[in-house]
Image 1: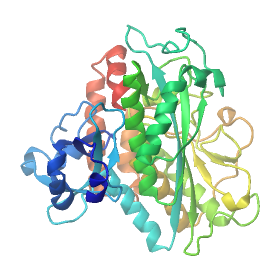
Image 2: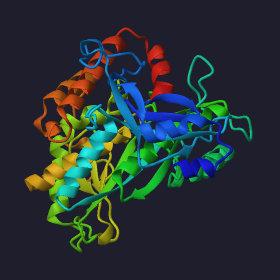
Image 3: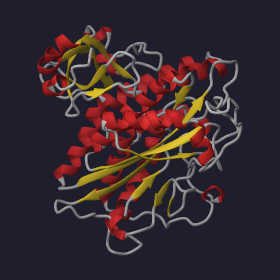
Image 4: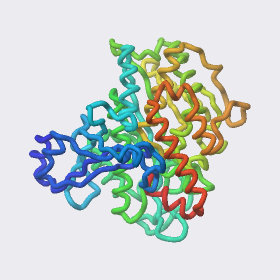
Length: 444
């Protein structure tokens, strides 16, 4: 890490940053000359800083705050090391960090530690997950009373229509996307294909698969930070809000994953289109945990506006081969690349928690070795299927009580997350739709 700084003498400021339960970056700005202190000795934050609500406020009655004297934890750099922050005018590097207790034990309320806990469960079985994510987001002009598509920097005109796979839509914001890809390269984020999507000013960028689930989550977290920061330089918002426009589809974060054994073989592949029994067991685990996991996949009030039939967001608990109306899709192609696409999570989610929830549920299924129901065919929205929780309050209660969730997440994280979401639910009831948009547009 010190060598990185020596090789980048242009860096004038350091941001040390960790992801809280909402995926918000919490941290400090420090002068470059004091970087060695953060690298070698770590930083100190209150443990409660990892457990703030969407406004950045303490959770009322949290045992992490007054009841414990608001004790500090110690945050150490992750294995990611320094990455540049190209959207800032001042040459700046971000040092990702994660939380430990004073005695050196991981802090269970840290979402990155939650994912590490799941990855360790895989390692105990000689298994290794491979993960990729697809992130959808909107470019939005929020300068007026209503949200609009930004005017094209090329023509000055607004195109008020969803444009699926439109090259013209990409061309209108070519300077933005060129700078975005350059920034991803500088940050070592493996950004691949960009497409225009069905919403107004909506786009999707795929991040290439990683054989390190923690790094895949880091990529997604840093990418969201980058899009939001860079878009403001162009005079508009880059937002991962689940559903900014009532009449258009919302944004998802689709996750693809496979699992390798100690010899590097894909355990989902049996050489056939069906896939192995292990694939089916993992599917069943994801289906069984889906009601309890919904709070992770739809963590905000606005999240549930996206979860409506026919709007490209799954509502029924089901799976299918090459079926994008199903919650879980098994893509076709070469059997050696057999994988699961989990399509439930919104773009407004915490990548660490989403990847932990999906991988943890799949591992539950592999351990339990139960077969799933038959795959669906045709339009899953028209089928009589079990449903995910229909609203935020129901999702909170299901997450809190589900024994399958207790196999994935530590009790402390479950408690903290539930307290956070109940506080947000209570205060969101007091806000107008406009005020909610103002909160979510940049925060998530």
